[in-house]
Length: 386
Image 1 (cartoon, rainbow, N blue to C red):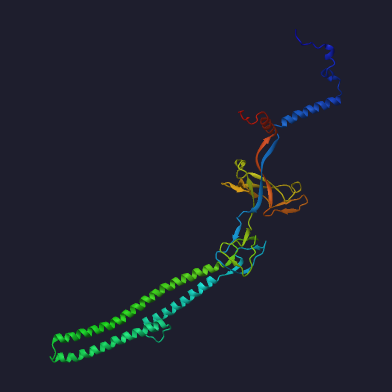
Image 2: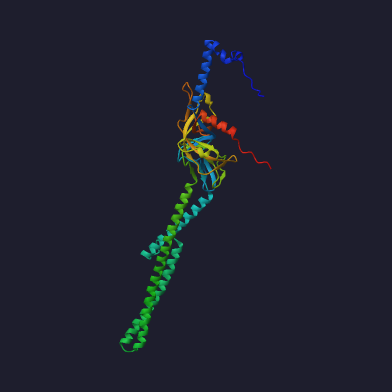
């Protein structure tokens, strides 16, 4: 037997639908308005678009890397012309160093150069005049003395041999001595002449060889002095870029500083950029030219609003910051200030922290609702029971 019951007509007459005609006009208007609003809301969910963003921490920094001030040589600090937060220009002198080792090395090289120049002066005089009156060094006065001694000995022997030759020449002409005996005197004369000429030529050759050696040594010394002068330029530490000094080390005149010791840092006076740190999960959605909004932590965004910019560069490699892998994304600011409604400007400065919001896409309300429902209805697969 069926459990369905037929509703009597008297009961239907008392239902809500049958009583609708008895509602007041005001109630009908409210009811229709609610229905229209509901329909409009449903339709608008397919039309209204909401921007979707990715958020990450960020930092304002100069577009160029921070320059480290480090000496190239060991030395003692002579003067220090720096202080924290000092604004400097490129080429401005920051520190003056002095090095005892460099000074001693320069002194020795100059003394050696002076000696060589004196030696060369004497050698040139000897080669031109072969006279010892203008010699300036003991070395070549002694050399000239030895040469004159050998020359005197050779000349004396030549005179003796010449006298013997002349005497025996007459005897040979008178047929007193034989031709063979006279030829011996002729041989001794030629030999004495050759020995005298050999003394002169060998000494001149020796002096010429020594002069060429000194010329090479002088050239080498001048190269060493030029290199030393270049190294001494490194004792004067200048600013490589314009900017602001920071992290100035506490060194004072008289203190020893060492090569590659960090004395200060220069924050370059260049265009400011925003460096955002995006996680690997979100980096695939970032592209160059993408618009970005920045919430500056130092300014209340309800009053100051948000800064804007675009993505300029994305790092190719991952970086570890605070034990977290991130990609560095460099962004260009549209303006370097935020402004209140009354016109007052708050300027952005290097080192300020921000929250970067990358505008990755736009979604309708219906798409967002669908994504949410999909998350509810299609949760992650449950792990199988063991």
